[in-house]
Length: 164
Picture 1 (cartoon, rainbow, N blue to C red):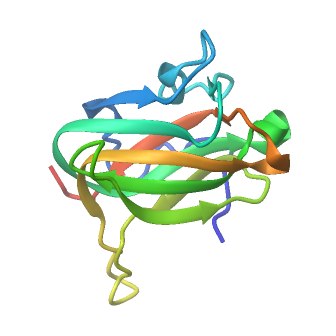
Picture 2 (picture 1 turned 135 degrees about the vertical axis):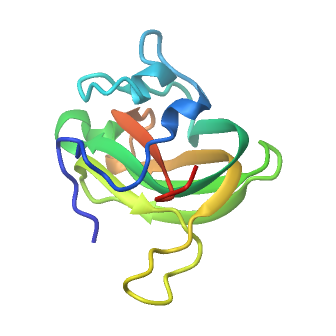
Picture 3 (picture 1 turned 180 degrees about the horizontal axis):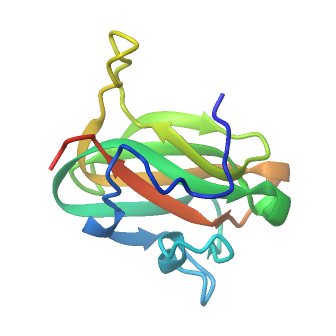
């Protein structure tokens, strides 16, 4: 079980590589675009607009190693706008994205950091294997209480430890 934390931990062992990418979203309401995902302010949020599924696409100029994603979701503040089911996809471009995993949330409130690796670790001391991709996409497949539009208050892409 992944337990959320309200405040983003300042010291994480994985490097934040979010700023090395170009971010886009499938839709947004004016003033609530992709920039709200990375501004570091949990009081701002991306607000999708239109039919589901909603997408956040993160494109890197070169293939990068990705270990984890960290999402800030707040059921307490966003109610039916809160994602309940997301799908993580990755690939070399928008046309060859492969499903990596599907994650379900139950009324999350805070930062949730999770592995995006496809292979589990062979030993407990060894971290799970990350993914290597040019593009990562988060697809919001369903919201709590069957909501249509989505709020995501923050998103970080974390690289592999000791990876340049």
